[in-house]
Image (cartoon, rainbow, N blue to C red):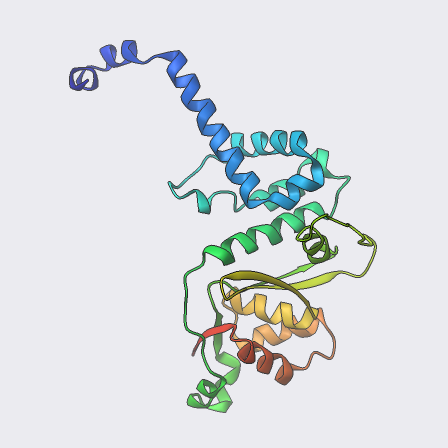
Length: 237
């Protein structure tokens, strides 16, 4: 084997095309299984055959960049949003994006939450510059579709998808609580505030996004809820 590595010509002869084909096939099957594990609701919505075809196309353009398969599939939601044959299910991409956040929440590192009393350590005149970092397992999403209701319906057996796909948009909060990932439907302002914090926005910028998402958003009540539910990891200036 060492001689083959040292001599590229001999190495090329030693490579077995059939063996490489088996390896490539096993690689693709492994990634398809990974996507099926991360996105079970998507698979149920479109069916096994469609999902497998969808996954194959995605894998063809998105090879794994890490040996940790828990990190694979982050861009699947954006891919689904642009996939021509999924246009008849306009809500599907946001369901997939929610599933990714559920997956990441489950495997996120543990961290201690901050207490609201920590705000007192900062001059009130500079609170607008503060950056509140959510816990690693916490995420917020806003969708023009009832993505959370669709996901929640698939957590019960048998599945009863009694969801009006033309109802109001949904905002959702994802977090891990006692080892279990919870998805809650929340107000758009709270979700926008938390999402902005997750993106690294200052308190002032996050409030602007919250008010844009929900006119009349109550900042005091929103911040109180974030701390009461232990969603914030730390506060930085």
